[in-house]
Length: 328
Image 1 (cartoon, rainbow, N blue to C red):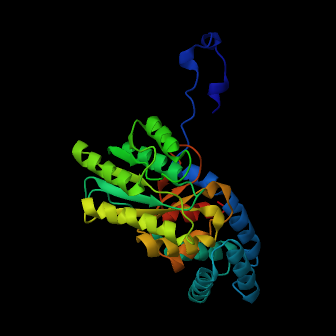
Image 2: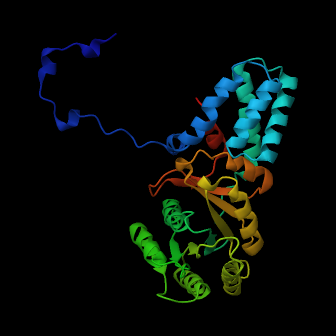
Image 3: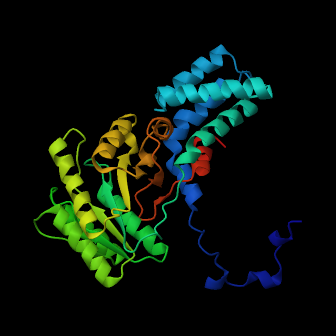
Protein backbone atom coordinates (compact mmCIF):
# COMPACT_ATOMS: atom_id res chain seq x y z
CA UNK A 1 0.00 0.00 0.00
CA UNK A 2 2.78 2.40 0.91
CA UNK A 3 5.21 1.16 -1.72
CA UNK A 4 6.14 4.71 -2.61
CA UNK A 5 7.94 4.94 0.75
CA UNK A 6 10.27 2.04 -0.04
CA UNK A 7 13.72 2.84 -1.36
CA UNK A 8 15.44 0.92 -4.07
CA UNK A 9 18.87 1.32 -5.53
CA UNK A 10 17.41 3.31 -8.38
CA UNK A 11 15.94 5.77 -5.91
CA UNK A 12 19.32 6.91 -4.60
CA UNK A 13 19.83 9.31 -7.48
CA UNK A 14 20.33 13.06 -6.94
CA UNK A 15 17.10 15.02 -7.22
CA UNK A 16 16.95 17.26 -10.27
CA UNK A 17 14.80 20.30 -11.00
CA UNK A 18 12.44 18.08 -12.94
CA UNK A 19 11.80 16.10 -9.75
CA UNK A 20 10.80 19.14 -7.71
CA UNK A 21 7.02 19.42 -7.36
CA UNK A 22 5.39 22.33 -9.15
CA UNK A 23 4.21 25.25 -7.04
CA UNK A 24 0.75 24.88 -5.59
CA UNK A 25 -1.99 26.27 -7.79
CA UNK A 26 -3.25 29.74 -6.92
CA UNK A 27 -6.37 29.64 -4.73
CA UNK A 28 -9.67 29.77 -6.60
CA UNK A 29 -12.01 32.73 -6.29
CA UNK A 30 -14.32 30.69 -4.06
CA UNK A 31 -11.39 29.90 -1.75
CA UNK A 32 -10.40 33.57 -1.62
CA UNK A 33 -14.00 34.52 -0.90
CA UNK A 34 -14.12 32.09 2.04
CA UNK A 35 -10.88 33.56 3.36
CA UNK A 36 -12.07 37.13 2.78
CA UNK A 37 -15.30 36.58 4.72
CA UNK A 38 -13.49 35.07 7.71
CA UNK A 39 -14.39 37.98 10.03
CA UNK A 40 -18.06 37.88 9.09
CA UNK A 41 -18.08 34.10 9.45
CA UNK A 42 -16.46 34.33 12.89
CA UNK A 43 -19.16 36.79 13.96
CA UNK A 44 -21.90 34.75 12.36
CA UNK A 45 -21.15 31.10 11.64
CA UNK A 46 -19.39 30.21 14.88
CA UNK A 47 -22.19 31.59 17.05
CA UNK A 48 -24.87 29.86 14.99
CA UNK A 49 -23.59 26.46 16.09
CA UNK A 50 -24.11 27.41 19.71
CA UNK A 51 -27.57 28.84 19.07
CA UNK A 52 -28.72 25.84 17.04
CA UNK A 53 -27.21 23.26 19.40
CA UNK A 54 -30.51 22.86 21.29
CA UNK A 55 -31.96 21.26 18.13
CA UNK A 56 -35.37 22.91 18.14
CA UNK A 57 -36.81 26.22 16.95
CA UNK A 58 -38.28 27.75 20.10
CA UNK A 59 -38.66 31.27 21.47
CA UNK A 60 -35.24 31.21 23.10
CA UNK A 61 -33.52 30.21 19.86
CA UNK A 62 -35.39 32.88 17.88
CA UNK A 63 -34.47 35.56 20.39
CA UNK A 64 -30.77 34.66 20.30
CA UNK A 65 -30.80 34.45 16.51
CA UNK A 66 -32.50 37.83 16.27
CA UNK A 67 -29.72 39.39 18.34
CA UNK A 68 -27.04 37.77 16.18
CA UNK A 69 -28.65 38.91 12.92
CA UNK A 70 -29.02 42.48 14.14
CA UNK A 71 -25.44 42.68 15.43
CA UNK A 72 -24.26 41.33 12.06
CA UNK A 73 -25.84 44.38 10.35
CA UNK A 74 -28.65 42.46 8.66
CA UNK A 75 -31.11 45.21 9.63
CA UNK A 76 -34.53 44.94 11.26
CA UNK A 77 -36.53 44.19 8.12
CA UNK A 78 -34.20 41.45 6.86
CA UNK A 79 -33.92 39.97 10.36
CA UNK A 80 -37.70 39.72 10.72
CA UNK A 81 -37.96 38.20 7.25
CA UNK A 82 -35.34 35.51 8.00
CA UNK A 83 -36.93 34.67 11.36
CA UNK A 84 -40.34 34.31 9.72
CA UNK A 85 -38.90 32.03 7.04
CA UNK A 86 -37.19 29.89 9.69
CA UNK A 87 -40.43 29.55 11.67
CA UNK A 88 -42.29 28.50 8.52
CA UNK A 89 -39.62 25.90 7.72
CA UNK A 90 -39.69 24.58 11.30
CA UNK A 91 -43.44 24.10 11.13
CA UNK A 92 -43.39 22.62 7.63
CA UNK A 93 -40.34 20.35 7.88
CA UNK A 94 -40.31 19.50 11.60
CA UNK A 95 -36.73 20.69 12.12
CA UNK A 96 -35.22 18.82 15.06
CA UNK A 97 -31.44 18.84 14.55
CA UNK A 98 -28.87 21.66 14.56
CA UNK A 99 -27.89 20.74 11.00
CA UNK A 100 -31.46 20.94 9.73
CA UNK A 101 -32.03 24.32 11.40
CA UNK A 102 -28.82 25.73 9.95
CA UNK A 103 -29.71 24.46 6.46
CA UNK A 104 -33.11 26.14 6.74
CA UNK A 105 -31.48 29.47 7.61
CA UNK A 106 -28.90 28.98 4.84
CA UNK A 107 -31.66 28.40 2.30
CA UNK A 108 -33.71 31.38 3.51
CA UNK A 109 -30.67 33.63 3.26
CA UNK A 110 -29.87 32.33 -0.22
CA UNK A 111 -33.42 33.03 -1.42
CA UNK A 112 -33.17 36.54 0.02
CA UNK A 113 -29.90 37.35 -1.75
CA UNK A 114 -30.53 35.56 -5.04
CA UNK A 115 -32.37 38.55 -6.63
CA UNK A 116 -29.21 40.67 -6.18
CA UNK A 117 -27.21 38.32 -8.41
CA UNK A 118 -27.56 39.91 -11.84
CA UNK A 119 -24.36 39.78 -13.89
CA UNK A 120 -23.60 42.93 -15.83
CA UNK A 121 -24.37 42.58 -19.56
CA UNK A 122 -21.91 44.77 -21.45
CA UNK A 123 -22.87 43.51 -24.90
CA UNK A 124 -25.70 46.00 -25.47
CA UNK A 125 -23.61 49.05 -26.43
CA UNK A 126 -20.17 49.92 -27.77
CA UNK A 127 -18.64 51.65 -26.03
CA UNK A 128 -20.45 50.49 -22.92
CA UNK A 129 -20.21 53.47 -20.56
CA UNK A 130 -20.01 52.78 -16.83
CA UNK A 131 -20.15 55.76 -14.48
CA UNK A 132 -18.75 55.02 -11.02
CA UNK A 133 -19.62 56.99 -7.90
CA UNK A 134 -19.13 56.74 -4.15
CA UNK A 135 -18.04 58.57 -1.03
CA UNK A 136 -14.40 59.36 -0.28
CA UNK A 137 -12.53 56.31 0.94
CA UNK A 138 -14.96 53.69 -0.35
CA UNK A 139 -12.33 52.29 -2.70
CA UNK A 140 -13.80 53.79 -5.86
CA UNK A 141 -10.64 54.51 -7.85
CA UNK A 142 -9.04 51.22 -6.80
CA UNK A 143 -12.20 49.38 -7.88
CA UNK A 144 -11.96 51.02 -11.29
CA UNK A 145 -8.47 49.62 -11.73
CA UNK A 146 -9.65 46.16 -10.72
CA UNK A 147 -12.67 46.39 -13.02
CA UNK A 148 -10.39 47.32 -15.90
CA UNK A 149 -8.34 44.20 -15.23
CA UNK A 150 -11.47 42.05 -14.97
CA UNK A 151 -12.94 43.27 -18.27
CA UNK A 152 -9.59 42.80 -19.98
CA UNK A 153 -9.59 39.20 -18.77
CA UNK A 154 -12.92 38.86 -20.59
CA UNK A 155 -11.26 39.96 -23.82
CA UNK A 156 -12.62 43.52 -23.77
CA UNK A 157 -10.76 46.75 -24.51
CA UNK A 158 -11.07 49.42 -21.81
CA UNK A 159 -10.55 53.17 -21.53
CA UNK A 160 -10.51 55.10 -18.24
CA UNK A 161 -11.88 58.61 -17.70
CA UNK A 162 -10.26 60.51 -14.81
CA UNK A 163 -13.41 62.39 -13.87
CA UNK A 164 -12.33 62.94 -10.25
CA UNK A 165 -10.75 66.38 -10.68
CA UNK A 166 -11.67 67.33 -7.12
CA UNK A 167 -9.39 65.11 -5.01
CA UNK A 168 -5.66 65.71 -4.91
CA UNK A 169 -3.67 63.01 -6.72
CA UNK A 170 -6.83 61.25 -7.97
CA UNK A 171 -5.73 61.58 -11.58
CA UNK A 172 -2.25 60.22 -10.76
CA UNK A 173 -3.76 57.26 -8.92
CA UNK A 174 -5.95 56.37 -11.88
CA UNK A 175 -3.03 56.77 -14.28
CA UNK A 176 -1.04 54.33 -12.15
CA UNK A 177 -3.82 51.77 -12.49
CA UNK A 178 -3.90 52.49 -16.22
CA UNK A 179 -0.18 51.77 -16.50
CA UNK A 180 -0.52 48.52 -14.55
CA UNK A 181 -3.30 47.34 -16.88
CA UNK A 182 -1.87 48.88 -20.06
CA UNK A 183 -5.05 50.98 -20.42
CA UNK A 184 -5.32 54.53 -21.78
CA UNK A 185 -6.46 57.17 -19.28
CA UNK A 186 -8.14 60.37 -20.50
CA UNK A 187 -7.36 63.14 -18.03
CA UNK A 188 -6.89 66.88 -17.57
CA UNK A 189 -4.68 68.62 -15.02
CA UNK A 190 -7.57 70.80 -13.97
CA UNK A 191 -10.95 71.02 -15.51
CA UNK A 192 -14.60 70.16 -15.62
CA UNK A 193 -15.25 66.48 -14.76
CA UNK A 194 -18.07 66.35 -17.29
CA UNK A 195 -15.72 67.56 -20.05
CA UNK A 196 -13.18 64.84 -19.18
CA UNK A 197 -15.82 62.13 -19.42
CA UNK A 198 -17.17 63.60 -22.67
CA UNK A 199 -13.66 63.52 -24.19
CA UNK A 200 -13.16 59.93 -23.01
CA UNK A 201 -16.36 58.68 -24.62
CA UNK A 202 -15.51 60.53 -27.85
CA UNK A 203 -12.05 58.90 -27.86
CA UNK A 204 -13.56 55.47 -27.18
CA UNK A 205 -15.95 55.83 -30.11
CA UNK A 206 -13.10 56.86 -32.41
CA UNK A 207 -10.86 53.97 -31.30
CA UNK A 208 -13.51 51.24 -31.20
CA UNK A 209 -13.10 50.69 -27.44
CA UNK A 210 -15.52 48.27 -25.77
CA UNK A 211 -15.86 49.79 -22.28
CA UNK A 212 -15.41 53.24 -20.74
CA UNK A 213 -14.99 53.38 -16.95
CA UNK A 214 -15.71 56.93 -15.79
CA UNK A 215 -14.40 57.92 -12.36
CA UNK A 216 -16.18 60.69 -10.45
CA UNK A 217 -15.21 62.69 -7.38
CA UNK A 218 -16.04 61.22 -3.98
CA UNK A 219 -19.13 62.76 -2.45
CA UNK A 220 -21.00 62.63 0.81
CA UNK A 221 -24.75 62.23 0.28
CA UNK A 222 -25.32 65.39 2.34
CA UNK A 223 -23.22 67.53 -0.04
CA UNK A 224 -26.12 68.39 -2.29
CA UNK A 225 -24.22 70.87 -4.50
CA UNK A 226 -21.52 68.29 -5.13
CA UNK A 227 -24.07 65.56 -5.79
CA UNK A 228 -25.50 67.88 -8.45
CA UNK A 229 -22.07 67.97 -10.09
CA UNK A 230 -22.20 64.19 -10.55
CA UNK A 231 -25.71 64.52 -11.95
CA UNK A 232 -24.25 66.99 -14.45
CA UNK A 233 -21.71 64.38 -15.58
CA UNK A 234 -24.61 62.05 -16.23
CA UNK A 235 -26.44 64.66 -18.32
CA UNK A 236 -23.32 65.37 -20.39
CA UNK A 237 -22.88 61.64 -21.09
CA UNK A 238 -26.44 61.60 -22.40
CA UNK A 239 -25.58 64.35 -24.88
CA UNK A 240 -23.07 62.11 -26.62
CA UNK A 241 -25.11 58.93 -26.06
CA UNK A 242 -28.81 59.42 -25.19
CA UNK A 243 -28.93 55.94 -23.61
CA UNK A 244 -25.84 56.49 -21.47
CA UNK A 245 -24.49 55.89 -18.98
CA UNK A 246 -25.36 52.27 -19.60
CA UNK A 247 -24.50 51.37 -16.01
CA UNK A 248 -24.14 53.57 -12.93
CA UNK A 249 -22.21 51.77 -10.20
CA UNK A 250 -22.14 52.90 -6.59
CA UNK A 251 -19.08 51.71 -4.66
CA UNK A 252 -19.81 50.90 -1.01
CA UNK A 253 -17.34 50.20 1.79
CA UNK A 254 -18.66 47.14 3.65
CA UNK A 255 -17.20 48.50 6.89
CA UNK A 256 -19.93 51.15 7.16
CA UNK A 257 -22.64 48.55 7.77
CA UNK A 258 -26.16 49.98 7.92
CA UNK A 259 -25.01 53.41 6.69
CA UNK A 260 -24.72 51.80 3.26
CA UNK A 261 -28.50 51.94 2.96
CA UNK A 262 -28.56 55.74 3.28
CA UNK A 263 -25.81 56.05 0.69
CA UNK A 264 -27.69 53.88 -1.81
CA UNK A 265 -30.87 55.92 -1.38
CA UNK A 266 -29.11 59.31 -1.66
CA UNK A 267 -27.00 58.45 -4.70
CA UNK A 268 -29.92 56.70 -6.38
CA UNK A 269 -31.99 59.86 -6.06
CA UNK A 270 -29.21 61.97 -7.63
CA UNK A 271 -27.86 59.70 -10.39
CA UNK A 272 -30.16 56.66 -10.71
CA UNK A 273 -27.87 53.91 -9.42
CA UNK A 274 -28.24 50.67 -11.40
CA UNK A 275 -25.72 48.45 -9.61
CA UNK A 276 -23.47 48.17 -6.55
CA UNK A 277 -19.83 47.31 -5.91
CA UNK A 278 -19.23 46.16 -2.33
CA UNK A 279 -15.59 46.54 -1.27
CA UNK A 280 -13.40 45.65 1.73
CA UNK A 281 -15.46 42.65 2.83
CA UNK A 282 -12.22 41.07 4.02
CA UNK A 283 -11.74 43.80 6.63
CA UNK A 284 -15.13 43.71 8.34
CA UNK A 285 -17.53 41.52 10.29
CA UNK A 286 -20.47 43.47 8.80
CA UNK A 287 -21.08 41.31 5.74
CA UNK A 288 -24.68 40.96 6.87
CA UNK A 289 -25.36 44.38 5.34
CA UNK A 290 -25.82 42.55 2.02
CA UNK A 291 -29.02 41.11 3.50
CA UNK A 292 -30.23 44.56 4.54
CA UNK A 293 -29.60 45.83 1.01
CA UNK A 294 -31.61 42.93 -0.42
CA UNK A 295 -34.66 43.78 1.67
CA UNK A 296 -34.55 47.59 1.71
CA UNK A 297 -32.56 48.77 -1.35
CA UNK A 298 -32.60 45.82 -3.75
CA UNK A 299 -30.06 47.06 -6.28
CA UNK A 300 -28.06 44.37 -8.09
CA UNK A 301 -24.66 43.72 -6.52
CA UNK A 302 -22.51 43.53 -9.63
CA UNK A 303 -19.14 42.96 -7.94
CA UNK A 304 -17.67 42.30 -4.49
CA UNK A 305 -14.12 42.81 -3.27
CA UNK A 306 -12.36 40.65 -0.68
CA UNK A 307 -8.72 41.72 -0.88
CA UNK A 308 -6.09 44.12 -2.15
CA UNK A 309 -4.87 42.12 -5.14
CA UNK A 310 -5.82 43.34 -8.61
CA UNK A 311 -8.00 40.28 -9.24
CA UNK A 312 -9.77 40.36 -5.86
CA UNK A 313 -12.91 41.95 -7.32
CA UNK A 314 -15.34 39.56 -8.98
CA UNK A 315 -19.04 39.25 -9.89
CA UNK A 316 -21.35 38.55 -6.97
CA UNK A 317 -22.57 34.98 -6.52
CA UNK A 318 -25.32 34.61 -3.92
CA UNK A 319 -24.61 30.92 -3.32
CA UNK A 320 -20.86 31.37 -2.89
CA UNK A 321 -21.45 34.33 -0.57
CA UNK A 322 -23.95 32.49 1.64
CA UNK A 323 -21.80 29.35 1.74
CA UNK A 324 -18.85 31.46 2.88
CA UNK A 325 -20.85 32.91 5.78
CA UNK A 326 -21.38 29.52 7.41
CA UNK A 327 -18.88 27.28 9.14
CA UNK A 328 -18.17 24.32 6.89
